[in-house]
Amino acid sequence: MQLHNFFRSGTSHRLRIALNLKGLAYDYVAVDLRTEEHLGAAFKALNPQGLVPALVEGDVILTQSPAIIEWLEERYPTPPLLPKNPEDRARVRALAAIVGCDIHPINNRRILEYLRKTLGCDEAAVLAWCASWIQDGFQALETLLAADRQRSAFCFGHAPTLADAYLVPQVESARRFKVDLTPFPNIVAIDRACAELDAFKRAAPALQPDAQ
Image (cartoon, rainbow, N blue to C red; front, side, top):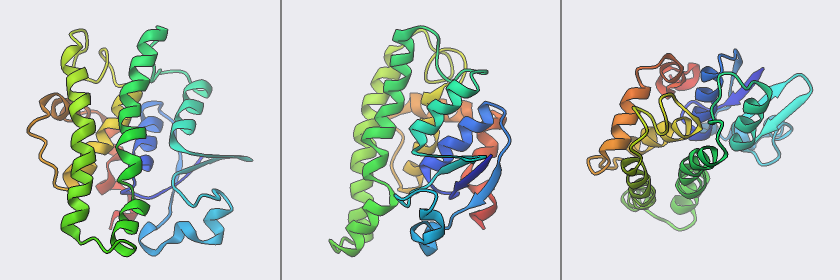
């Protein structure tokens, strides 16, 4: 497998976590968003959207991190990232979707670049934009996590799931955007628990080869 990704990309980060949790080896191919390499012809031949990540296995090219992670779950079902019970699976998917659908897409690089370059927003306004949507999503997540008396140290149950793979990169992003995490003790505790696991440690942005 080849993983075409960027160290600081939240979608790339979540996919690295998923691959590590599955115990799958991959070749790390850096795509430098800082120099707009993702908009060049070479990368767009893999993904016409010009978005990371892209996962290549043989002749198969996969894009969109939710679809790739679902493919991993179907192709490499052990260890699972989703519980067996349909209702539990829906709950885990919903927790992940709060991040993947309602927080990350409106805070990703191309949106922030539009705010800066097209709308003329300064960095204070950009940070305020990011904080608004992260706090909104995290408030809902925190409420759902606090209400689940069955879970242990993670988002659901007693082991990391799809939801944790989505949440941890968003916490990383929240810290980068200077969001106060004090109102979200359950989220902070989950992030701390995941940080103890090798799969999450090895996926951390600061440890990737293009982070320097």
